[in-house]
Image (cartoon, rainbow, N blue to C red; front, top):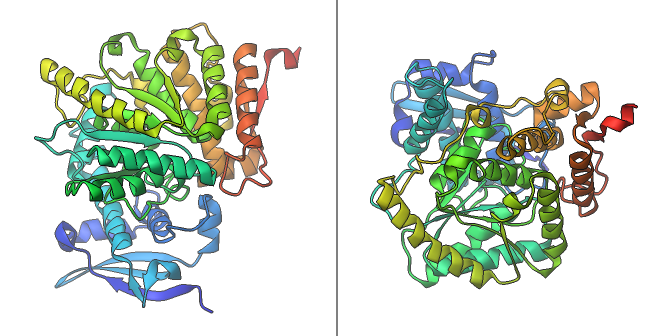
Length: 461
């Protein structure tokens, strides 16, 4: 049986109906300065939603003949898609939700490139310029809604989780939904899907018609975390750093479920912000939560944070095991605290402008063997700087696991070599080994081959 659709022509809706010839040319341009390769990767990931594939390179190789082009006709724009995965269609018609996600990809790729990154209107060499760019991309995607009280809980966690962990995160999402709280995730499967699914049921029971299911991703990770079917507001940020900043600027509270290296990257990024002296009095409630079987996972996380960043970082984190109702109630109560703080400070409800981020946290970190080896993983620096450096180490591991560029780097030069303070390296080694043992590194983790090695300074003596 044929496994893909030979060709389909789709007419975009809304503002995408009137793309210019220049924009269409950019989307078809296969050169490095064009957008076709990014469009092809993101579109293929969207159309492959629901599969068990989290490796961009494998996905591209599997559908090597997949192609997407944009044509401007007299009556509007056409998308010409060739050799797309068959499971994206019902009776040869593209599923409507996937069509909406596909249009979001085109919207965000064009807007980020033309109106933000290359427009000259944003100084992305400065911290505030980057934050301003993120705001404009989010606003263009419809994520910024005025006159709405703080109500968004960001849910982080892994796409490679057990069924029990999935059911728990869905239950917690249901409890949040019963309290009319909106959900924002990384938009993929696993923990990024379950809270949305649960919240949809909770919203339905409360007849809450304004429920929001926000998914924020970036081109490098979209294959590993293709937008799930419950996402109704999708936004593709240009890179992982802007994606992470968008989460903390748009969200009013954060719940962290079990995950792997990507979840640790998110947690360390968050700690690098919360530990900054200028952010100490800005409320952003954080709860780590899972079922009883996840207790050992969270114990390992807290041990790692204690060994590397110390008690001050641990005090910022609250772990609640097997009590989803308590977590939801805590988040609902915290929404009022956030509202009062934003009102008193005249900060917007829809975007946290007051959080202080340093440029090093915002500029893209490109994982290479040199950049990974040169990370400052020592305690001779402020702890919020160390948290940021540790975040980059986990970002590199994520890239080596699932991102096409990272996988190619590993295939060409071997595993990344991570070196630093002996105490930090031993703590990192222990944590990563637990992730491997618990099969949290990839969806297909039955025979995981690490993309990294942990080196201690005394190894070279």
